[in-house]
Image 1: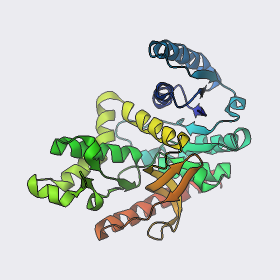
Image 2: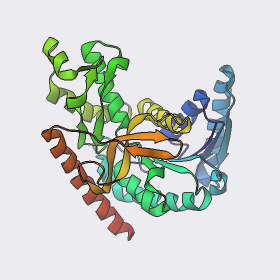
Image 3: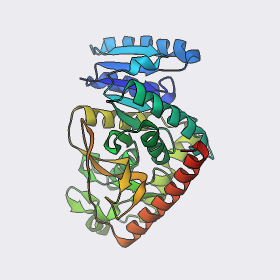
Image 4: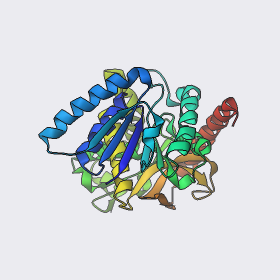
Length: 316
């Protein structure tokens, strides 16, 4: 059992993650941190959640708070706060305003929860992962971005629907930027242990269409309902549970690279990583086809350019 603190807890993602985590019964204390002018809403969310948890006989201590002091002794601090992406906006459009928020939170986490793991969700998440890392001064294994975990789940579902196969049989992964420069690793995707290329022979798969559908998923949801909600919240809760239970699963998360993958360094990108209660135990080396490698390099270049621009703006 563990303690998780959520910065930005009254937002769509923050409150949904809190409720999803509480229902998983792997966390015994969740602090819902909010600004002073939002504390009443946080209190209301907690009361509403308790009613639902009572119906499932789940016991979890939910604490609405506007004090950083309540982050003390957290195992994980989740950063969800920031300007939300609106229709027509790219995740990178959010970089400068959200960097200021994440930069401040990184410092507060270092002060009040120095032994915690920081999990970054605020977009653009790869850029924000580096900002949180540098502002907190933490070891890089303890600063993790949601990265391509959600993208990987989305690709898994797209393929499962296409082939009409249980999603549990689909093993696939997305790396790179969580955005337009994501890199689906279709070359290493398997279905029931069989390489994807052999399944393609039995049922036609329009790969460019699949990749475009994957990249547009978030925008499509935002265009229809205004925000993504259930998918990100479950992906985040799943990632937190993976860390807390010390499961050593391999998930695609954003982490600061130092030549572990294709000699890319000085930038945070989504890559396969083994997760444990200490954070990232190891980054998993991978082989890519040439076109995937080129796309990964392109993602690194784009994200690094934005990160450097944001850091210059913050004077760090």
